[in-house]
Length: 175
Image (cartoon, rainbow, N blue to C red):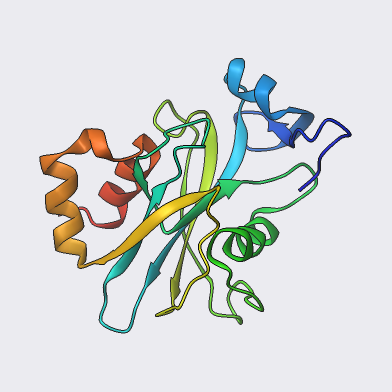
């Protein structure tokens, strides 16, 4: 992460074409809803189940809600593919992965919108059955679920899921 002395994260600010036009501190980006970048990963095991994380109550956004297997911001100076590898290491303890040749597959892209919190997002997928080393400040726990069960649960209790996750799940598993 790119952090100044105060420990705050820097993000690249982008325009409506996802081109870098500046940089700002995380708190400023979120307070002003500036366009920025993020990544999400859906991890599937050999049985086709997806791992969902329950976000830590320490998170500043969507604490305690269910989310993608792994997600995070693209730090200033990073590109999406670098960010996803870093986030998989930080959140799930998965090391030595790479995009495409290393098993992490770029899946689809989501334009910045209200549901994503003004984030342009690349969605990735990975086949991995664990074990994971969950980062306790990031993730309170997790669960493996069949995709049909995730769809059922999101429909039954949408308030339990992060807005960006609901959007990307609907696009990934549209009926």
